Image 1 (cartoon, helix red, strand yellow):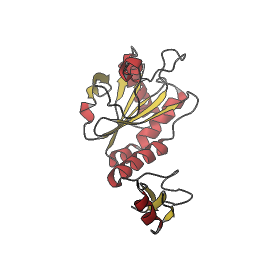
Image 2 (cartoon, helix red, strand yellow):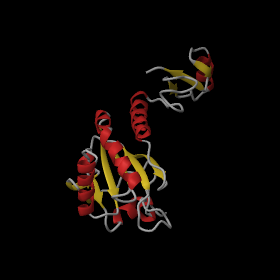
Image 3 (tube, helix red, strand yellow):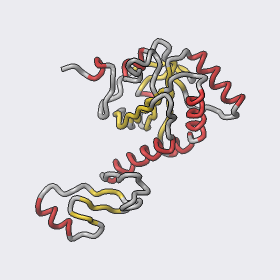
Image 4 (cartoon, one colour):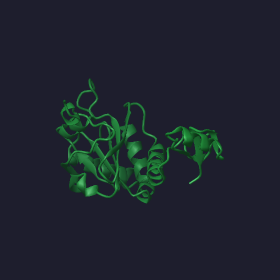
Length: 217
């Protein structure tokens, strides 16, 4: 059976492959250098482009929020490291925003092809991909955005926090958590797996039915 790496893509639940990359902060070993941390690896179509510039500014301005969630940011595009460095300098000089996180230089596109960041039919440019990788190097989430739509950085932060609450309490997160229309900031309790448990669950508070119960954490 063909594995995901040979297909040139990663799937949710895969272990992130080991690789050495050149970044604006020097060489890094992935995922080893981020062991014990959450990693938000995101690609952008190209340096010195309008939408990407607004995204990098937003990532930078929210960097402290990612740090509080034990998460690091790592950018990537099919550009040389010299182009990355100049773009970062331009953002700092012209927009007065420091970019505190590294950017991978993937000028040959090998990394992007390996993990599925190149859009079929889109030339050699990377799509706006987001990979959230947990402290055990497992891919937990993959998002793709088209070239004309910038990312919602607040949503990426929300997802990170939701993963951490879910992992800690073994619960599921409702739509729009923590502002769900039915249960507000509550989380969803796993459903029982036998008839006895289902009958007992009906007697508990905060249940719409035995399979839909919630609680505050």
